[in-house]
Image (cartoon, rainbow, N blue to C red; front, top):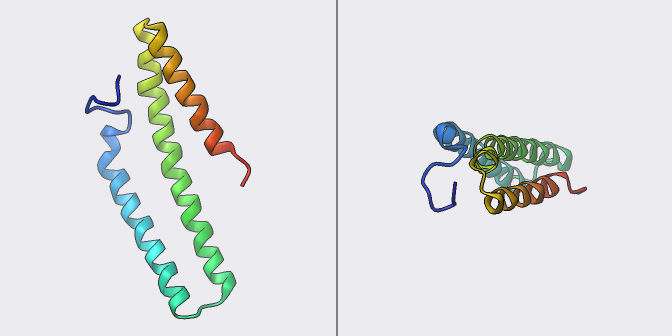
Length: 101
C-alpha cells in the first residue's frame, strides 16, 4: 500500500494512539513545569525516562502495525519491487529503534 493511500497499518488504532500521544504531551509539559519550579534533578530524569519509554511503546506499536499491514501486504501482492521497498523501510526502522543511545 502506498504512502498516499489513506489506510495505514495503525489506522484502526489511530484514536487510541492520538490519546496516548496527548498523554505523553502532558507528561512533557509536566517536565517543563518541573524545570521551571527548580525540582530535583533525579525526579526530572525519572520523568524524562518515563516519556522516552512511552514514546518507544507508541513507536513499536506503529512499527508492528507497519509489519502486519504494509510489509505483509507488499509481500502478499507478488510485486517484487514493492516487497523490496517495504523490506528496506522495515529494516531501516528496526535499525533506528535498535540504535544504541
